[in-house]
Length: 351
Image (cartoon, rainbow, N blue to C red; front, side):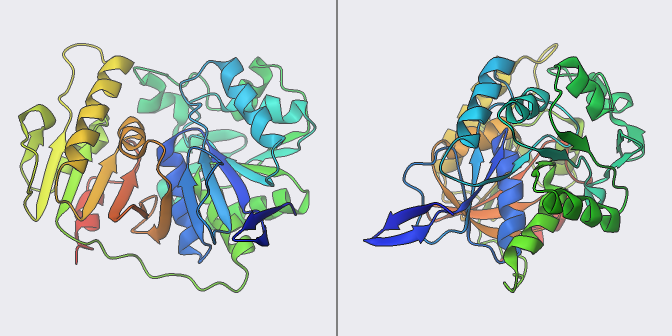
């Protein structure tokens, strides 16, 4: 294993897992930390925190061109760090087919395990389902920015001309998921998938490490929602707390629980709308006295954290990673993750 120098001592380099966006990176980081693996999440490999065993690197490739995404993957595959996995979108959005092709092009064997049963994602006979709907027939098939046209990962790989040593492995239960990941590891493949398979990988990497209890959340708690998904909006509404739009909110002291969201667009949404309001939400969040910031949506998480490293603490629930950004506790949630009660369950962890 390659080594780095820390305070005059040669130290093993941390293992490297990549992700195509910040919420995905944080999800994997939370899974690893929950298993007792010292983990940081960031968007660069320079200036890594000391005493970590794994770095989860946000490549920010979800919305790049295919060629740019492929080039970034080739760069990390050729770095001094051991690449063990890449977190892809659980509903097959993004540039992952081009990223897999890029890995195969430099001789990397890969296994795609597109299942996360605890979050309602399974792969059966090569078809990915979300809560029993083939993903292309689910609401993600009508995503306003990136509609998913097929439910078969193999179709995406065929379309981009990927011909390397790549396998797609089924899993419909946690036991099958564990077997698929073990097969990938036994065959010395780089693991690709949503957060679910990385829970199995974390158990393998952790060895005798002690599982951590769910972290408690210091108050006051600020929930910022930049996601436009109907599920995320239902989640914040279900709390019963007033939801303010960010352009109407005043910076400074907040209540014990405060919820601030981006306004819904008039007409079809566009990427500029999401980015603009994500920046407003991030600026507002840092201006408050919040002890915990709950950030919903990938663009908002990216705007909030920018180039900061987050030291991961664990999971507050399925796909609810918790970490420290400076002295603030940050919880991240993807827009399409959870049930209507997810934020209510999270708020029950407030100290």
